[in-house]
Image (cartoon, rainbow, N blue to C red):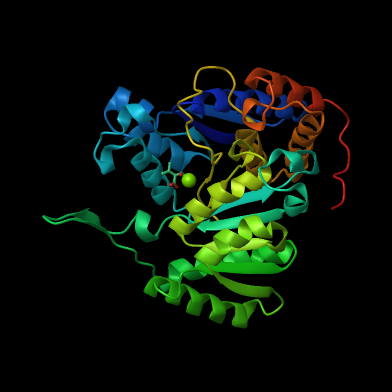
Length: 359
Ligand code: IPM
Ligand code: MG
């Protein structure tokens, strides 16, 4: 069976990092006799320029037919003046919604080699290894929004079922990890948060009594994330809080440029894999983009959609070795170019696989 990948390079540094992912995937697949079909389509600003809309029908159809979608980034100053529904970001939101990828997994860990590369004290970030599960197809992002004569509004609405499915997925993941689950909400103010808390507590009491479960208010959580990051294992939260907190938590990895994501839905339909860093228009085209968030997203795709955890582990190990060797891109204070990192990762991939170190 051929595994069909739809690549959506998008805008800014998106095309640069997607090109790296393609070559690294080919290198991984070659000795494995894996049948891959690679197709590319337009999204975001690139699609607006070519087709006048951020998510052309052809892109959506190709995505629905693919086994996995790899996305670079969308957005940039060129399209900032456009109305909401015609902006590049709207294309990504429509795609997430159409693929029904309601759970966005964002793993964030501090590699020992990079503990000195964050603005926090190394002893504070040491041991950080958390997995955010951000709800991705509901809440303020998708609620009714608009303007009236005196102002503007965005409706935040969640249905019980939308909460339950993402919390169940997060709870299962917590079970596979260290068994700790944190719900982040604003239940002292928001009615949707009170529903999240009710539904989550019920579900945990019914199906996941083995987990160490806690709830935190989002303001306190924002503080604890940088004061005591190693206390977290799996975090589940609604769409907007998840967007904000994962940029904050990205600092713990050393740079947002290292953080990947996997957006998953039910058992059918493709997963959507994208780095969380965005299009970085200020460095686009200069050959210095950090491709690691994209490559780690590729590792998530190998693991979750291709069911090749062995290849995913080989790729992640190669990335670890490159960083341990001090080959660092500009966002980590180094001088390695995108091409240098690609070359180093490819070189480490061809070394005999080592078992992943414990801990
Ligand atoms: C992200 C991004 C997107 C989001 C933007 C580009 C719409 O910030 O994936 O975190 O807000 O979800
Ligand atoms: Mg974001």
